[in-house]
Length: 124
Image (cartoon, rainbow, N blue to C red; front, side, top):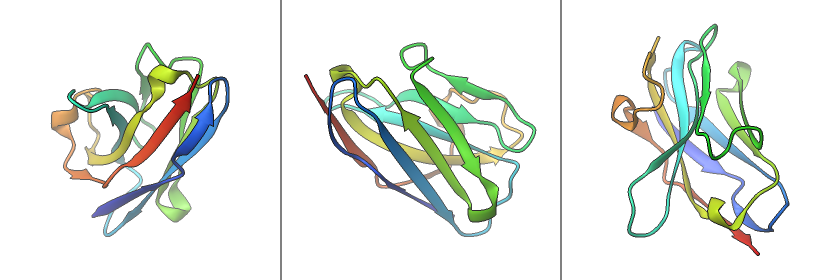
């Protein structure tokens, strides 16, 4: 299982970006997937997660109302629509894949497979 992110870039504050994460390998719609982000010198912070078909979604308080996570099961791809971006959203964004029927979606330790990351820079 290998996730690969795309869609990062440079955007002005208040703008939008849409990240994609395509997952190759043997997966199912029941698996949990999440976005985390990291700035230099700090650990990876939870952004949003999707618990899979019939599962819940979860968002960090800092992105609620601005970011939306979604999945297209037909093409094994997860998305993160980011609106009203702020300079503090600047980070490398990572896609990660976890097991099916994951309960604690926000805990990065529960995820097994990670993408290489895509960089998002929001200028003020």
